[in-house]
Image 1 (spheres, helix red, strand yellow):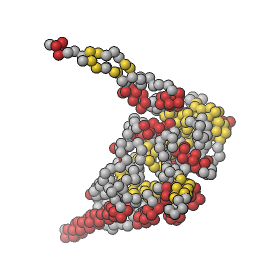
Image 2 (cartoon, rainbow, N blue to C red):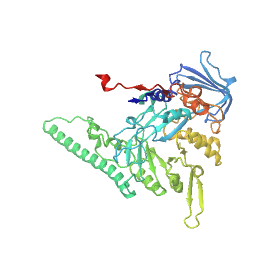
Image 3 (tube, rainbow, N blue to C red):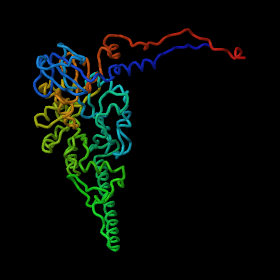
Image 4 (spheres, rainbow, N blue to C red):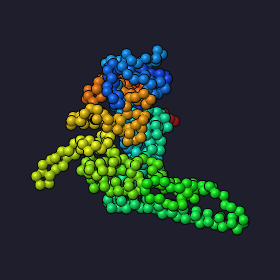
Length: 471
């Protein structure tokens, strides 16, 4: 009996593909200079024939080449044919994880850190399309989801990728699978209602213990020492539980402690609305529980119909990746198209865009669509840079090219909103994390260059030994 013996070097191929963008991930030196024929700062006017000086991961100087002194010992990237812009900011994403949601309804005690996959192709695509900051939150199919994390798309471990750990929580007003809107809101009310009940019970028990200790001290002729309460008073703008300062926070169940911290205004909340009817209940829920100051609405594209209520609430929003809402008249069957970002821009509501996918419809594409519908390039870019950075609390770090900010810079072959432009190099915190000339997958797709070791190698057939030979 004979069998074909084929050597397929799949493992080597996968290694090449996954590692194709890691070649430039090693930290650069302490200094770097970027030159560009045009610098889009998103902090003012564009700079023609400009220079960016980077030291220790931050921008130390930026301006026209004639006005900026370049360190003599710094490597130089770019040139007059390139355009430099801030790295794009994904204000909300459930990509890059091995699963976007947990099965349980209320899981604030979990963390997306345990689901993020550093070698996910998603992060490779982020480099390729210039996304340098990503707010990873669990998906919308939840009630109260686990703790999120802000990451950069480079690093061999989650810790190396992390920009801000334990950041934000996803809460959904829209029903998750298997629930109606009524049961979804009932689950939300129960989660925060049970929190309040448990805290009140702990506070009552602690007060009774404190009263007993006071009586014992008086009976023994001594004063009960003041200021030894192990806890702290409950803060926040929503409801409060009196006497919580008598409760050691270590006594509070870790499963509900994150909910308490939300009510106290210590975490950002991303509140998902799947339809216009969800918006006002979401606003009311946030106000009732003291979440308003740190809440961002994550919206389905139909929620433009509730734009007036959102504008009155003062909340910022992250828009759905589908930027055009199409509605068909049930009588005339005529279709009406609404350009969703245009509605929010007209109402003065701060909004960030979302990628539809990590390649063909990434943030640059979404911003270009906005320009195609009449929005100014600067405003479209803001929705994927400055405004997005403000929404996730990193406006002082990323989103624009300014002295003192992290050096997250893209070098592009043309305007970032031009369909023919490519990211030539991407720099994150002063390190080159992507170089198109070393992008194995792109070379394969655009130039037909087959990755080394990716082809199957046929060998001669080998005859297996028979039973008689074995004897």
